[in-house]
Image (cartoon, rainbow, N blue to C red; front, side, top):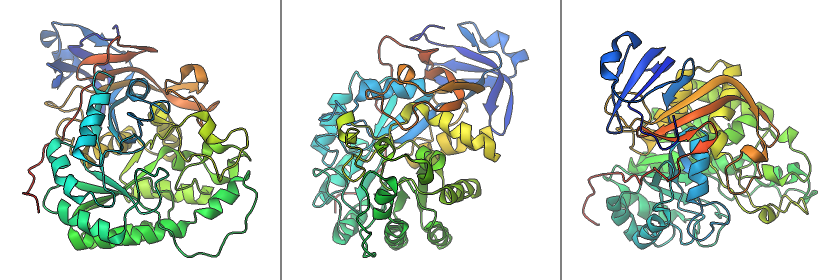
Length: 459
């Protein structure tokens, strides 16, 4: 089936339907899943092109709700064309673009429209957009909700870019009041500056020096703040890229007390560990930092227990010079890891060894991220009426990450040379083949996704 083709049915011996994996045929009409039939009953419904994928696994396309595309303004770092092709190659059928590190950031209605113009005609997969909360923009939030942003992100510490300043307590309270009654969600980069014993200077080329500069207590105290706000205002709150297991008890307690709080972690916190990061290997730097093996295993346990709701990429690329590869200085390098294309394979490589099932993969990579963005009425599940967004992959197939098979604009990633399990064969977005065995549709076939909510009148 050529990239760009419209598919009217997909047949496989392994279709992940609800709580079972079985032989089935997915009938597709007008970009939606029309019905899912046992193979024996399908022949009368399959007048058009049937894509028979044999024993390959068919499951909902991945929803990656934490992606920094960086366009407009920093398209040398990434951009919609390359980001969404990489997504398609990794079985990701929907991305949600963060409000930074584009210039301008998505912090006003005007800036949101500028971002939409930059993304138009560039997206190979469906794309939704987060807005941002910064000091002084509270009156922009409701207009952006009406325009269809998925929700908002703020930082409780310097964001890394000056045009997206972090918020004060007063800013967050003002934003929460604007968001009450809207059904929207506020995402928190949950690290706070705290008074901790000054770390000895240390060698900037050693990862341990950087790690000591961002201790667990910075996440713990920030999440304490978030849980209090969430309980006070009863506005949906979401903690992005949890790296430390220490705040998990706070999170559990807040939820028991009725906080509408969700939590994500990322592929790098689940797959990498501080002890194995070589000196000068600044491609491993991100904020909050990758922590030790014991912490990593506690994150896996929390995923299994349901204390962490979803796994995302936090794809945050930059140009190689900003990673300070020549000097190998962790204190000066840009913090961000590129992994959008490899999320499914990274997750399955590690999760399958820890007793996670395909159903867990769908819950953590598809259903929960879709629900966070209020896209779960069309994305994240193989059920009639939903968009026909499918990833067709071989969970047993191994491959090695190398520069030749990376579709991100900048190829630097800590996963170079890593052998992964689970290879994507075909990606289908709303019934159209956008990626197949290394090739892409000639034209971008993704669309912009706008989240519809009833918005109260301005305060």
